Amino acid sequence: QVQLVESGGGLVQPGRSLRLSCEVSGFPLDYYAIGWFRQAPGKEREGVSCMANIDGSTYYTDSVKGRFTISRDNAKNTVYLQMNSLRPEDTAVYYCAADTTPIYTIQDSCRMTSPHDYWGQGTQVTVSS
Image (cartoon, rainbow, N blue to C red; front, side, top):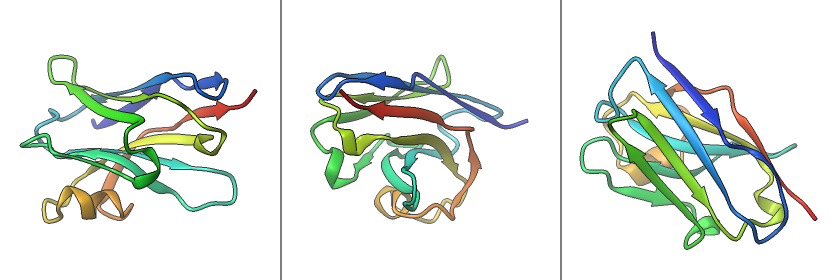
């Protein structure tokens, strides 16, 4: 059974850091690309950062480049999102998801929710003073 379980969210002040974890079960990390998405109230879900399954290539949306880092630990079957220099506009529910359609580049995959068939339950990140 496939499961993606996020953790690590919380309330932080602007400029601080958080590390999100996505523990995957049901398939190894070299099977599907994994992405982090977020959804703020009243906004569409957007791709934040994604990692390809085979070569580990990454994509970041412009607003998080230089601040967020995606990584994975194959032994723990866990994907991480290190978020530094957090801003109030980063406030959202963060989801991890698996792209089960092996036809997109990691850049295209991360810009779409539709190829992602497996989703976690989400973890709230609130950046506020």
